[in-house]
Length: 133
Image (cartoon, rainbow, N blue to C red; front, side, top):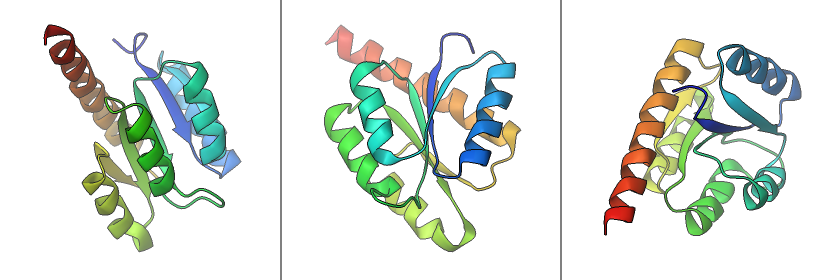
């Protein structure tokens, strides 16, 4: 199932972003990285994505602003927020705004993979239900 899931990973920490992309790709995931919220939104306008993993704290457009825009344009997209210890409240706020879940940064790969799978399954179910209506 990993081959089918399309992931967009959004984080302004370029070293972290490139490391996590390599780790996900080595496990067979289709993953693209974006270093800013604006770059993520541009990418989404051109490509289909199943799950977005996005840092809450980014310069310019922060993760919550990007989440609001994503949910407006792509309501069935699942988003997992990355949050530091100081911004757990932002992760919870993100869930109130429609994010699937949040993960503490730096995310353990196994925990992230589990949440990605759960988010992907929820999106697949939501799409199947919307098609059935």
